[in-house]
Length: 243
Image (tube, rainbow, N blue to C red; front, top):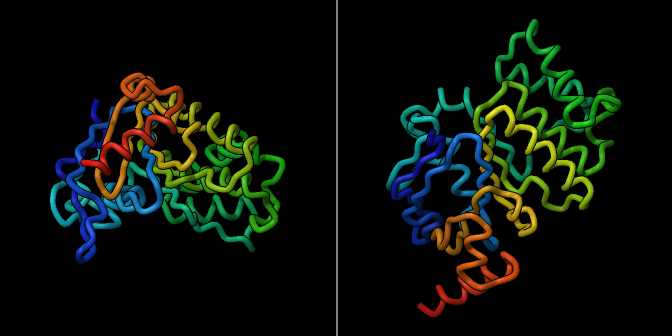
C-alpha cells in the first residue's frame, strides 16, 4: 500500500525553488531516507508532507489524505519530530510525555500502558523522574521520539533525528526505529549520515530542490560502481552540476 505520494510537488520562496517537482511513492512499513547537503530541500519537503507548509504547485497525500485539504485530520495519523523538537527542560521525562499526550488528545485511561511501553521501549524507564534538561543528547532524542509516538501514529517523519548524537546513541535510536517496523509504521527520515542512509530500505538524494536519485542503496552503488553511498552521491552530484 502506498502511504506517501507526491505529484510534481513544488515549493518556492520568492525566486528560490526549495522543492522542485518532487515525485515519490513510499510504501507502508518502509524506512525511506532523504539525504542531501544543507539547503537541498529536505526540511521543506518534510514540512510540506506534514501539512505545515502549503505547496506552490503540485500535491502530496499521506494515507490518501491531501496535505492541504485535510491538514487537520492528517495529524491524527502522523508524527513529526523536527530538528528542534520542543521538549520542556524544566519538566521531567514523564511530564513531557504526558504533556504531548494531552496535546494529541490521548485519553487518560488509555495512556498509562502506552507510556510504560514507550519508556521501556526507549530505555527511559529508569529516568522517568529526571528533568529533560538533565538528559544527554541521545536520551533527549529518545524522549522526543517517545513523545512523538504517544498517539500511535501510522507515519513518522524524522528530520535529522540523530544529528550531533554520539555513535552509540545513534545505533540505539535506529534499533528503536526497526522495532517500529514490526507495527507497520512508515518512517520518512532525513539524515546527514550516509551510514544511516544505508540502513533505509530506499534512499532519495536531493540537491538544490531536485530529487536526483531514488532507489535501494545497493542499486545506487552498483549504478555508480561505487563502494559507498558517499562515493556514489558525490559522483551523481558532480554529474548533475556538469549538465
